[in-house]
Length: 459
Ligand SMILES: [Zn+2]
Image (cartoon, rainbow, N blue to C red; front, side, top):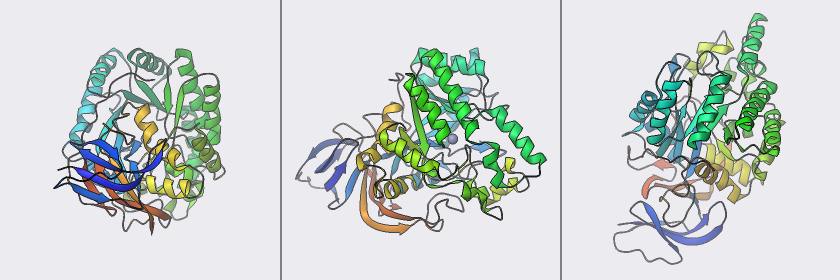
């Protein structure tokens, strides 16, 4: 057996060339011109097509209890959608409640995923409390292959931690060579602004933005960077949305803080007017930090192309319109989240590469290679080279379509990019040499995805 990807234009973060790729025992074993397939080998003709390393989403919420309900996807539905869109590995977040144990949360998330997940996956673990017992358990979590943690400066009283906990979390990360990421918003400012808006009877989804304006995010970003500078430890900022927060993070970079920045496909292409749509339509576009004024978009694109921003994720969190209506009379009760897992790659390709905002190698870098490098999966994932997992996306750039909830694979009744034209689709997608997608549809085996164990040691 074995799989031959024939005659495609291979595109990695640092090179573009035409060759054949031979995959055996789930890995890439040869990259040459004119490889003759042995008898019984599966051959995918990639002539005229692009061959990318499997894309990696650094930020998804598939199993997600939030505001008394659960996000709609299962690991099966989400990873089928991810694969149809070219994402072969994703990072979900195991989130213990403040009173729950980290090891238990890890086991809960793995229990939901293992046996049903169709792509490979890794987990970040959220630290929602920090004390001696949690510290002990985190060492066990690291031993089980989770080496990145997330803290919330927002959501005080539920998931958020205080500054003493933040200090000790960063100290622990430095000692163990693990990476802390943060949701950067000043929780107290958000709380007061929500109260003021509600008191003024400003209740609709259009007010969500004003309850957490750019300065709130900038303040949280600066705070996180200052703490990292104090302890001299690398950090990662999730879902950065605006110029104000970017300037704070870049100021920290200039001071020598090792800060990596993630933005989201939604911030690059949608703006706050979507959340202002009438008749509660705007609720579909409520997430935190909120969609911003359009003037932020060119700044984010430029930062992405120039290397100031390292990665593009989705923060995929699918709540349907019934769930969103929990906040009909109070925007604070709208479940936060926009589903984008399936469309990240083709939206970034269409509006980044095809429109000249992003070079094609940089596109691979921000949507795959950098994620693998930052979170300890490189070179197993994130590139096409001998010895890497045979996670490949054969992309047909000539195909054109329009995004619609009628044809998407995620388990939610709307698509935030409804009506957007997109260029290209996945002609074939492989996970460790198994063909999981052909012509944009899932044709593979369910449940073959693996949990990816990682080792500590942040660079
Ligand atoms: Zn998130």
